[in-house]
Image 1 (cartoon, rainbow, N blue to C red):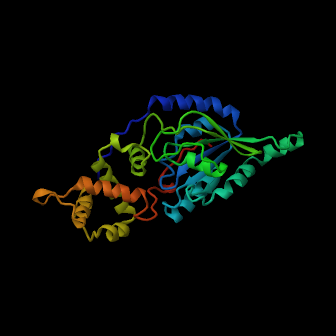
Image 2 (cartoon, rainbow, N blue to C red):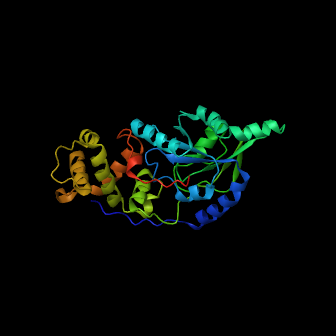
Image 3 (cartoon, rainbow, N blue to C red):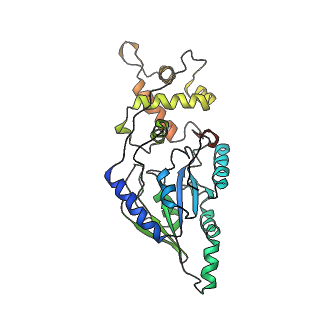
Length: 294
């Protein structure tokens, strides 16, 4: 088994963001929580559930283009069983985004009815958009609002400050910077966040990370690895053994015939993150006792 990385990453601006979220929750009618469909459990900040309390919630399983479709369906069923509304999206291609506004209005239909009874037709609904870094919040908001105003980059922690975004006359979105939580109780959560790029690579040992990913993928999708990296019946099925074998097959050799495992590690992570390995989900709902505060 690959050695777990000891990831403890909670920059000061994230603690400040958490306090700001507590204040901002009083301003909104519901919370939209954006999750990475490849790691719905690991990409779910447990603090957000606690902060939200009884606020209605919409769960968005994003990046479905990179996730296993059957697994995404099971996760959606799980979150619906907790009382949350759920939609599945690929924000970059806009897949599933047409369901966003109807899902919000369905989630808050009782509030809309109360507004109508009070003669407040047209009063906007206010929704907080929350999630961990690099999960696609800015892209989601830009696509829904059909604008290019929010800064979205494929690096953790680039969105700053508080932004209200008008979707239409009846819906306002509050964008929040992505926050991680103070510690990862389960070290595998930190590892899976790192596999998908939610934690910066420069604070990690790249080979240790790749060994963990290789071992996990071998457990869940062995046939894919066999086909992609020409791995056949390896004697050593540890992450490092598989990484070495894949590196040898790719011809990543150093002087004296040593295998360049660091190069292979970077290739593995890159190909996993950009979907070249196919649509893969790293965790399933029945494996965890998911604590969502409902």
